[in-house]
Length: 239
Image 1 (cartoon, rainbow, N blue to C red):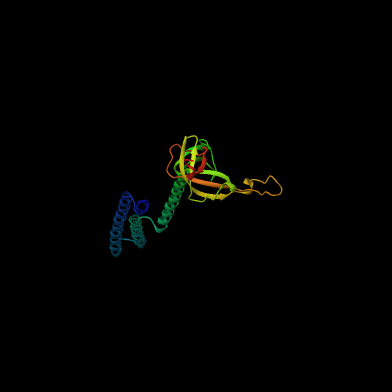
Image 2 (spheres, one colour):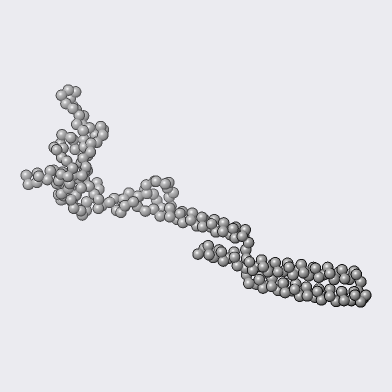
């Protein structure tokens, strides 16, 4: 649409200008006709010996000038009817491209003002204030996905007891006063910083800690990150 409007704007000439050029051409043609009639009349009088050679030459010059005036008026009319030149069209097209680039940059700047969270959830922390400038990659908010909660436990390796991914656990959450059925989804050794050091120099060894992660079998209303949880094997229920 912008290109079509631009093409129309640079290709067309105002009707008033065309009418003015047509009037100039008509006036020039009228002057030419008068010059032709004057030249014809002077030549006839010159043959009768009434006109001098100087008058005849001046009449010929006037006729030539009138003809050039008609040619110039016709050229001006053709230029008005033809519209802008190829060079003018190229300049106008370049200006349109420049304007489009400016619009694209402005739209990109506006898009950068809209920050979209990578996931849905609940905002639990805000690291910036209204009007504050932040750099790219800086954290703005803390979002908790309440639909994707899980339990994390740090267990010594001598207490794992053959626990494996997929095993079921009974997790007690004191804040909810409830026991929740959960399945182990991850067992991962932690770094040396989490090892339990031997208390004797001989006859004992260090025990590593493992992270055990378990996900509830069904959504648990009210379960939030940071709540304490206690576990025991599912088969121990009823003992």
